[in-house]
Image (tube, one colour):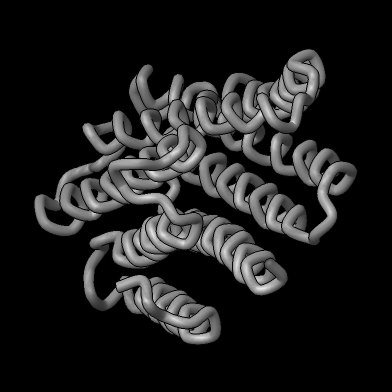
Length: 259
């Protein structure tokens, strides 16, 4: 399972990434089973298993960073599968649903991952908080104006929908900000270029943010004309994280050869 060379692994990931995009454009014919996001999140889960194996650890013996990373993406993969089951098999609205519990659990594990990483990177918590509050206020203001000023009487979602439409983008901004901060911090303390993976990490947060904002507005206002544009951004976001993990794996290979 984990005996692939790096070049073979890249080819496999690119192939499945292309397949996920093909399913995205074929959804109008196949029905909405959320297949693109299931494939792309599954790619990341596999890469995390691969990364754990390459570091010499096992599923039963791994460090906390790897554990939280794995739990986060297992939660998101489960959420995407549940979302597809509700939508494609049961033909019911999957938002909000049990899938959201797993989406939120994934973000919680991600926060724990960042907390564990910061014991190494030692970035002041005040910097995280100030940047998150600043960008969150900007996002909140835009959402507030859109929801309460322009279309307050056309809301079609529930109060839970309303809370989630604010919660998810804030978590996404945390991913985006953390990626940027860790990029500059690791660039200072690392001798290799593994820090480049943090740019992909941050890009994931950016695409997740776009996807969650579009999805939230579509659900609140009952928009359907974008043909699941948010799914495309979710898919790209997962693939960005996949390439971030792949970047880490490649530098592990370089380091082992140098040793």
